[in-house]
Image (cartoon, rainbow, N blue to C red; front, side):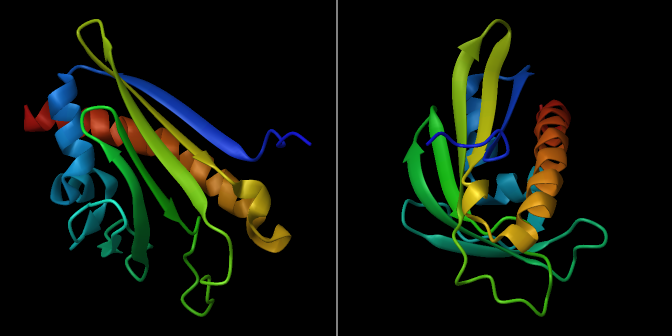
Length: 154
């Protein structure tokens, strides 16, 4: 059985920065937090679960939590998390997580960055559509955010 067209979100951006610089913006948790909108993250290392406080207006009550899966320097960063886990009175720990994979490739005048989040079909039906829609919008926004961050930080 194949996954539905709402099981995964994919975004791609061409960034005017060298691959090493884009990697630093992804893999250094402090830099990641600046463009992603999270403060106080612990170090990104495979197997680590990291937490931070979301800084986006209206979501300051949310604790950002992810478990780092893989880090292939200069090429790939992946983590698992509970998508759109924003209600302070809900316990999401029993739900499946989605997998977020960032991949970097060389591109003309910079770096191609892709992000794929998959696993939405496993999210409870009562939350699935809203989580998918919010993350679809969110990833488009975050790809713009990292592009702007890299320009400002240059």
